[in-house]
Amino acid sequence: MGYLFEEKIWFWALLVIPVVLLLYFGVVIWKRSAQKRFASNHLMAKLAPSRSKFKPILKVTVICLALACMAMGLVNPKVGTKLETVKREGVDVVFAVDVSKSMLAEDIAPSRIEKAKQLVSQIINNLGSDRVGIIAYAGSAFPQLPITTDYSSAKMFLTSMNTDMLSSQGTAIKEAIELAKTYYNDEEQTNRVLVIISDGEDHEGDAASVAEQAGEEGIKIFTIGVGTEKGERIPLKRNGIVQSYKKDQDGETVITKLNEETLKNIAAEANGEYINGNNTKNVVDTMKDYLNQMDKKEFEAKQFADFEDQFQWFVGAALLLLFLDVFLLERKTAWLRKLNLFNENKDEEK
Image (cartoon, rainbow, N blue to C red; front, side):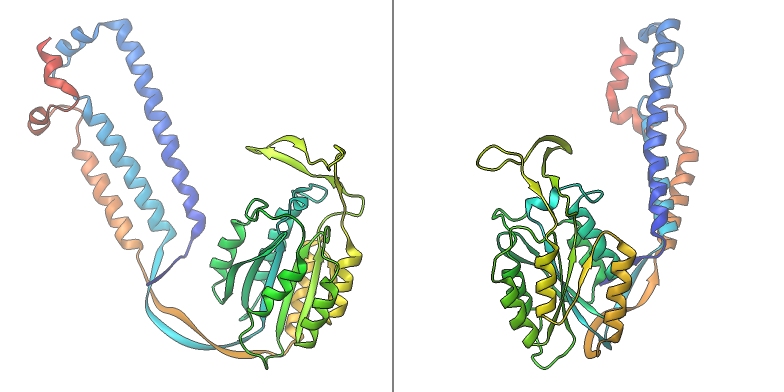
């Protein structure tokens, strides 16, 4: 069963709930302070014997649940009840993202790794019916997501990528290219594209020769460079705070620089092109133009259809909760006396 959210922006309405809770606890603290100045707890129990300690908590809980249901109703979740096979035409695009420690450098905002993820996400947003796959690599290559038409899953996996996911360090572009070859399941297809996003540092020397072999097999390789030629230190952070900077074996601070020459050679060997990643719009437009010019392959894809609105259930639940709230007076009731929540009867006996 598939699902989607029609108006995701209304998820922000859920922020009203913590505001309501803060206001409630603020009022509770103020009331207790005021009551202590007026009378003791024992005297207050005598003056207001029917007042319940549990009812106010129950009321605010019901209100928060009603707000949550109303927000979900505005989001309008939809459920796909029918899975159908459709024919699509597109290009198979595999993204190989460098997750080595040098990608932590912040010579390109907010950092090289975050910029790389932003570029991939923006390219995916501008795809048509193409299929995508994702590879992470540092000292070795790791399959992050196989070829799929599910762009939402692709961006979810992309978000989780970081420089700690692979223990071996380096920039094994060779292994990334070799792994990418296994992503394409049709030897005759001519629309195979590999997009490598990296700073080009610490590369293996034979990456260009492997790229040449990939080019002979019909794989076009585009390389996108992130970073600057001037370079920057590699920050080592804990909880988002810089603790120190990476040093070499001699204790000198490492300065990592963008190696465009390597990335250009790799792209040239596989009939592709090198693109500087500093300008996001330029990267997206260039990739979009190249992909639009390529031959499209027809393939079958399964997708959910007949999505049905589910907002009415959430709106109904919200109205029911608000209706119940009207009858939840702050006085004790017989059933609450029997439950004796918060030892209220004990307080009365004192």
